[in-house]
Image 1: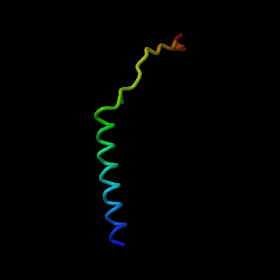
Image 2: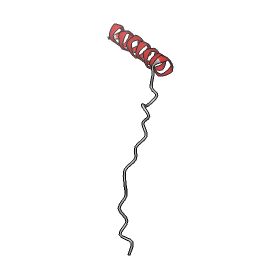
Image 3: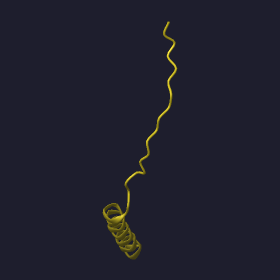
Image 4: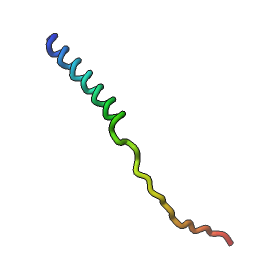
Length: 44
């Protein structure tokens, strides 16, 4: 049982390191584009 707990702890630790590394090194910036849409106003 202790071996399983140790394995899960190591797996969670490595997963956390991987997540932090991806957050810092991965390209997480959104793609930007101009959006223009006509608006019809019902002014009399």
